[in-house]
Amino acid sequence: MPRLFIIDRYIVREVVAPFALGVGLLTFALVTGRLLKLTEMVVNRGVSLGDVAGLIGYIMPAFLELTFPMAVLLGVLMGFGRMSGDREVIAARACGMSLYRLAMPVIGFAIVIWAISSWLSFSVRPWANRHMRDQLYELTQTRSSAGLKEKVFNSNFPGLVIYVDHITPKDEVLHGVMISDARNPSQQNTIFGKSGIIVPDRAHRTITLRLFDGSVFGLEAANDTTHVTSFRIYDLNVHPDAELELSKRDPEEMSYSMLRSEALTARSSGKPDYAAETEIASKFTLPFTTVLFALMGIPLGLKPARGGQSERFGVAIALFFLYYSLMRAGEALAMRGRLSPFIAMSIPDLVFIVLSVSLFMRSAADRGDEGRGPSDLLWEMVERYGRWKEAA
Image 1 (cartoon, rainbow, N blue to C red):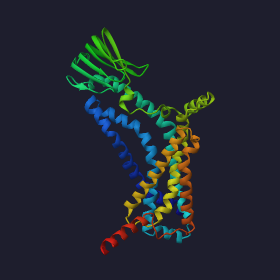
Image 2: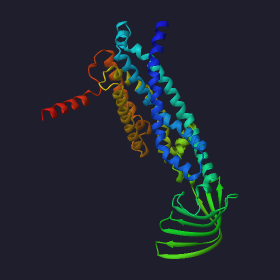
Image 3: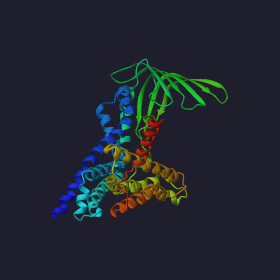
């Protein structure tokens, strides 16, 4: 038993290091895609770096759900690739250890990550999405006037262009306001106000631009008419969630019990809520990918890689891209009602179950072609092109 415990620790240690590296790199790559929007909030809206860090923290659980399976595949590929290259796997199997036994610590590690991913999916991500929406609203409420620049045409809100001549720093009152409202193409308005304030509406999650002492110049495209209306008080409602483009779909903010209640209620009324049912299915199918990728990474890691660990990294990226494409295709079928959400979201898992089990069993029975790696076809094409170029 002590020897088995030592080998288990050794294998897990070989897998954990590249797994942690993969989580860091892949999560950073996903966060980078949001940095442009977050940087714009810092520069143009006066949002502090601490607030941006809080938003990134709320987005992180959704990113980790995607990076965990891929990082497990990357960790197993590189870990077993290193041990295979140093002939350690051959030595272990020569001592009587089967590939099934060597896979046990890897599968155990994958099950732990599966449990963490499920916890993120069922509990943490809905909580984070709800709090992210709340923080976005609070930021928009408190920073709206900060995002408006004096004597500049501001397009901070969708469909609106706002010009403010002067902003009083103490009470943040807007003076000399002009607004071009093109949210409704059939009826465009230009609004002038002597002064104005920003009023938040927490109940409806909106922000009201309240103008005083002004006029509205309207153009109706349907009948080609114009009108002018004077006002003492004019309220213009804005939905900040649509403008920030960082809010999530409502089903992603619901807990599992809320989703089930929503789906059952919709089914009983004869109008299925495919978004809620698809979200429920994804909570089960996506975390399970960690086990499948761990099982697939063992036989692929045993195969030689001419390009070294960088080639194995490319193989991991390609496999995850295949899984992600199948997942998106299944999600589209589920959202349109073409297939049952559980069946549609299980398509990538079923495909990878067949691939991973068949590859692992062939390697365990020594029936796999251990002399050829997964990228040998590409390398052979490169070599043939080189020989053809030399001959020419």
